[in-house]
Image (cartoon, rainbow, N blue to C red; front, side):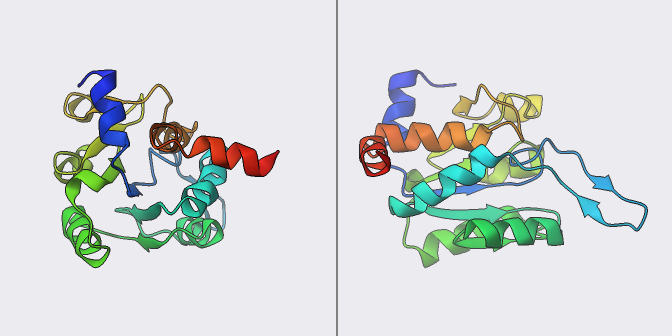
Length: 176
């Protein structure tokens, strides 16, 4: 893990935030009802900040290994710029988005919680995991967030990025 001055420096360069879903936007649990319908619980704080990221010109993308209609619906509701579901090789999608949006690794933050996220986490400019991310992930990221997946971990990262770029003042000003 790097020190807080280095984290703020990295955060100040971010132009896009990519993230996993299960274990990041959710607590990783999946509930099935008797009819086989999948249910997930999302934290409204994560959803709330996405509109401010977009308003500030920040790009957002979901890269998730599961293919779930519930997640597709949530991504559409939040107007996430790009979302990819059922992805086996997340790094290939990361590289595709990086090229499409003409970004460098240093301009991308990624938050993931499990070992299948490591190829991106070891390449992006600011790598993060929720407080309850897998041990092998926590050992290799720039920042272990204080919040768990499904409890506002994405919000914590987004707040850091917006604050480090001096964008939070304008957001607050427009709200008051």
